[in-house]
Image 1 (cartoon, rainbow, N blue to C red):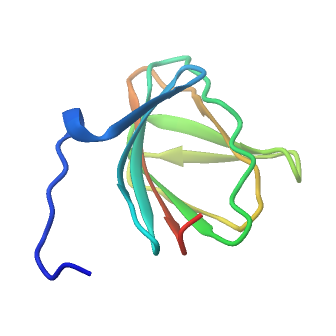
Image 2 (cartoon, rainbow, N blue to C red):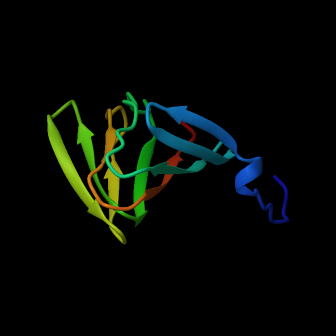
Length: 112
């Protein structure tokens, strides 16, 4: 592994549209994945079926979202500054229920 830092600009990140969710994947290594999702007010993201062996963390950097877990039919509400731990193999879907863009920083480890 390199011992120097690496900067990835938003324009360089892998960009994916998942329903109404814009996802930018900044890093994808053998050990970790890091990205950012953005949803406009009222937008709904695609259903991610989960990652078999990886924990995932959502950090709400801006906005007000619900994260739905279909396995237990439960909604978790996140406001700016909140974080949610998603266990392995747990499906999840984001809903922006706020009046501003929602920004969710997400990370999976070990590599999904």
